[in-house]
Each structure stands twice: as structure tokens, then as C-alpha cells.
Image (cartoon, rainbow, N blue to C red; front, top):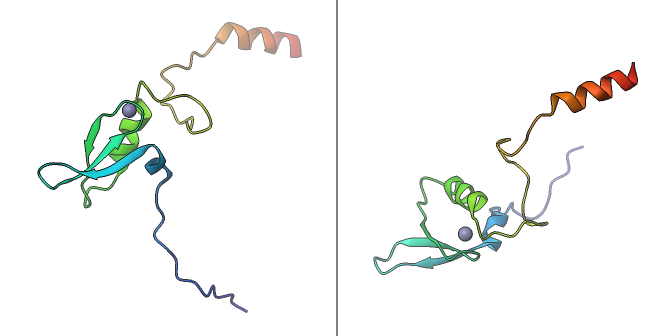
Length: 92
Ligand SMILES: [Zn+2]
């Protein structure tokens, strides 16, 4: 039997809005202001908000912590082959 939820699905609001402040600029356009470094980003309804998330990920003022999700491109990750080799030798 299928379970039907009585409530309608509400539009999910991205949690990045906890770090961005929504507003309107002098031209009447929608903007999003970074709460960390106050940079103002334009919001395009049709283009989505992925670019905002990307800017937020690159924010230099953004504190690292529970808010920050680790989805880096691996730029800071250094693969230590020697360390791995040592571990392999030990296991052998
Ligand atoms: Zn910022």
C-alpha cells in the first residue's frame, strides 16, 4: 500500500542562504550578499544558484567549520606516494 503524505512538497531552500543575504540592488535586480565578505552577487532565477554556491565555496572570509562542506576539487590534496608505499611495505 502506498503511503501518501498529506502535505505538499515545499520548495527546498538551499542552505547556502544561511550564508547569503538576499536583497534588491538599485536597479531592482535580485542580489545575494555574502555574509562573510559582503561581496554582492547577482541572482538569476533562470540560471539557478549553483554559481552562488561556487562563489561561496571560494569565499576567503568564510570560516571553515560545520558550515563548510568538503567538496574541494582536490587542489589542496597532495597524494603522498612514499607514505602509501611505507604502509604497503608494513602490511607485506
Ligand atoms: Zn564571501
